[in-house]
Amino acid sequence: MTIAEMNFFQRMLYILERYGGSLAKGAATTMAIALICTFLGCVIGFAVGLVQTTEPHKNSGKIRRALLVAVKAVLTAYVEVFRGTPMMLQAAFIYYGASQLFGINLGMWSAAIIIVSINTGAYMAETVRGGILSVDPGQREGARAIGMSHFQTMLFVILPQALRNIMPQIGNNLIINIKDTCVLSIIGTVELFFTFKSISGALYTYFEAATVTMIIYFILTFACSRILRAIENKMDGPASFDLATNDTLAFTSGLTRYNDKTGGTH
Image (cartoon, rainbow, N blue to C red; front, side, top):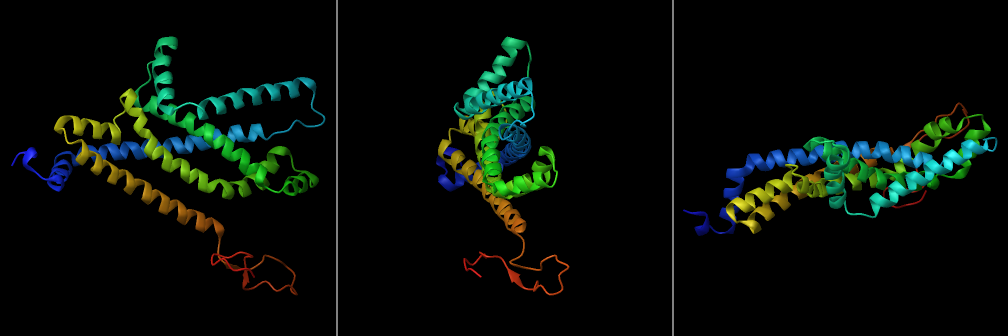
């Protein structure tokens, strides 16, 4: 039986049987790029977000204040440019621009990681900035009152609280990166979408190949979203807990959070 004589489901099975290995490799490449770039993007975003929320000390000199303002301006421009332009154009600009302007020939992996990480970092920078600003200012004032430096305040007081607030957005960026790696096909990165184009071009089965590829993308994103949701629930802690106190008169057992998972108040 030729492929033209097969029905829709038979052609899907034929694609899986003949190109299953290629689709699996493409999916593995997509996941690897998404995971690595989400991590690196978070590192970039945290660094940029911390600088953007840093205020000059009252005893800082004019040069130090001017330097901080200049750095913030450069970082703001970076965030606005990469959030305001399509990643497909960014990929072409960085990949071909690095070769033409600087003579740097980026490999497939290097180009993919640089492009997606920088793009993710721009979005994460705004997320981190918002997460830091969402923490009660009294937390920062209390930390400074007991003698903590700005770095210690951010590391031990502000960021642990901000991390829980921005955890959903980190998960969203991972899901987005799994899907958006398809734009890397413009520079020849052999990921899942590139594999789809190769299969559909070879067999002229665009609908069937697209259906199979969409199912694979959905499996990847759904699995990641479930895992991330479990991590968020783990970070919330148990509904009932014991207070850590040395006061023997305090009632500490069986306490429940103000707003538990059932939506009730206690």
